[in-house]
Image (cartoon, rainbow, N blue to C red; front, side, top):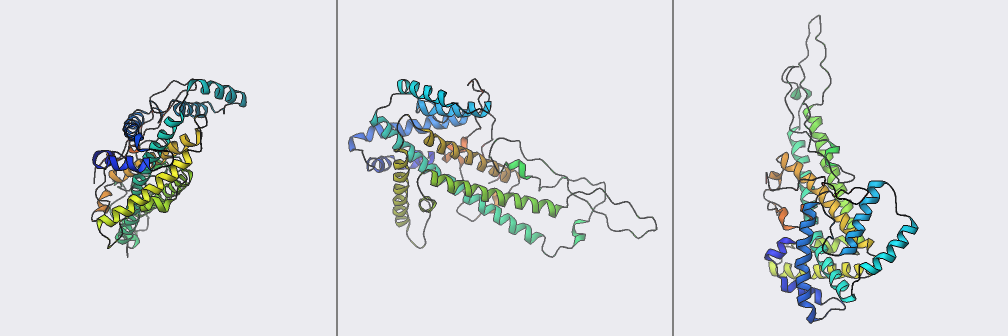
Length: 360
């Protein structure tokens, strides 16, 4: 989204939005201001661990806080509490139909751009995982057990293949520490003396550690793609259209590709807008849920990319269209894991270090 705001056609984007049902040319200035305001506010909120919709839409921010407080307390709001909250919010968070329509369109545009960027990120993760698997298979091709038996029992060198599955938090994409280093295994050549030397304590061989890392990366990329496909469906659109937003067909010219990409983008924005438009100002939980899932997937992807940078695996993108990757181009690459106390007081967020261009 931020790459588009810096170098894209903002006027063309506004024209795309005004083509949605219920809009007029006179809405252009409001749309442009709202698009810039919401994008900057989301970036600030995600960088600080605040609710995504803070200073954007007040009721949606309240929903985020309520969900976080419920998770922290382990208790879901009762039906009586929900009824009382519905009566309170109808008086506090008044939104005109025009304001809601513009917000829905702008949020749909932001979601479409972020889906396109996240989709490319997951494709890059899948590429690196596949190339790393091929590299490891080639490096161990034809290797006998004695290939891993150099050195003596007291050599405790550190293995570069040092990431365990839990370091990537494959299921939740939530907080966690950096990758832990594993000890590599050193084997001794067999002895033929009458008094055999005691076997060393079992430790993973370098090949076993690399196989574990390959498996971890492949599982991580598969989980990311599964969650991403589900997110597209939750937004009322399809992964095929999202792919078409960035796909460059050969041997078509760049201008032909741009036309196809803009057409796909228009359809994705329309799909998402029509889905968001189903929910009035008082029933915004589904809209909040899709942005929270976008944040969760972005955090999980950033963790994998951070491990790639640590392991110097971005070199595997050289010569591909993924060789240039700037996390600053998107809003949600700045995501942190928000944390709230049961009383609703914001605590210091559990930080997920966004991937930088280190090692690329």
